[in-house]
Amino acid sequence: MTSAPRIALRDITLFERPTAFVRPFRFGSVTVHAAPQAFVRVELEVEGRGVFVGASAELMVPKWFDKRPHLAIDDTVNELRQSLAIAKDLYRAQSGFITAFGLHAACIGAQMQMCAARDIPPLAACFGPAEIDKAVLDALLRGLGTDFFSGMKANVAGLTPRLAPDLGADDIATFLASRERLPRVALRHTVGLDDVIEGEGGVADPSENSGARYFKLKMNGDPDADAKRLTRIGNALATLPYDYQVTLDANEQYADLEALCTLVDRLDKDTALAPIASKLLYIEQPMPRDITREQPLGMLSSRSFIIDEADDSWDAFPAAKQLGYRGISSKSCKGFYKSIVNATRAAAWSAQGAPHFITGEDLTCQAGLGVQQDLALGALIGVTHAERNGHHYVDGFGFAPAGEAEAFLQAHPDLYSRDEDFIRLQINDGDLLTESLTTPGFASGAHPDWTALTPLAVPEPKVLQES
Image (cartoon, rainbow, N blue to C red; front, top):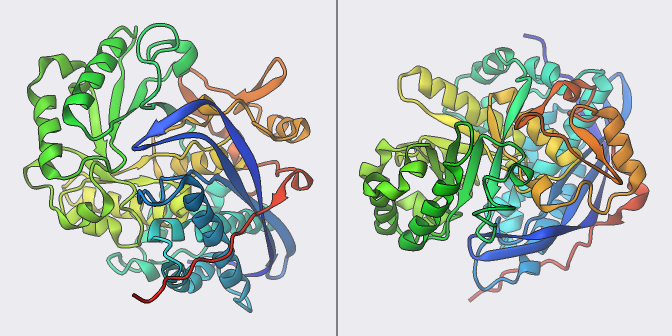
């Protein structure tokens, strides 16, 4: 097998842009009305080929990476800014030529330690490297003149089991070599806790759900209240003229296994919940991440549960498997290398006879780089339907200049369409198409208008005090 090309990072610049929501998004215990979007620009030398520019983008969603109640919304966004700034310094400190994955592996340990010293939890600590890694890969692929799917099939990033010793030496490369791009990925429509359920603007309204055949339903952690709300949603979805399937997401709101058992018992026995229970694929991250790591699912392991917020380390999936969880979410904001490794694990475990899987969940990925890179990742690793609600909460390209939105439309006419004065995500019979993502680079034939972005507003670091 040929060795991966080597790269040397020459510069990293961090930017941000405000993003306003057209409707409130409530999940867990927080309601989000706006969030800044982070942008990363790297200049990368590809050995023997020259210097190339790569980019990535991700919404800095408050109170998801860190839900600790004493923190204000702004505190949790500032953690993500600090995570990016710390990662920038660590990545730039690497000298000499190295593989793209080698760059990540060389920095991730120090990243976790330095973030911990600033009271930034592991999930938020992963954010900075995740975004820089995407931009590095974009530049590498542009330097090679190849697309994401072809490049990853050939493992141009040099991904190895260095951080996943449970895998064999060739497992990841063999898995990647077997991948074929999914031509379309079904949209899973998220129903937030404040979203309309019945009638016009409700979950069964095609002008709201974009013709989705999959639905992700948020829960608040109260079994009785959740059962009543799910009954209403089930009655509404039962009016759809086509079949549908659902997933449930509690965002860590179920306090313990007892409360979760109460909900599952209702799903098993309450006939009013049959429109949900009979269509249920899996339940996502029901309990807080700390309790999740300590509490085996026991009898509940006969059902499909997945972790999401508890996925904050390279060994999170094997640990969750031992507790009875069958799946894990892929989110490029948590690290696309880890998603590929987890997909490799799921395939290997399933081949041994115990079904395991990887899912596509997003953080309201926005039009442009965010949604395209995460969509491409899912289409590579076999995610057939993915939560995609960015278009539901943000109007088109938001505050991006018209010229930037136009550039993405021209580069990706199968993903965007013009709606009067706005350019919006284009959904085809409930699916997103992936053909135009095969352009050279990481799934994008356009870059942001860098002159229209402001520098990332990095706060002063918070240092833990000795007690």
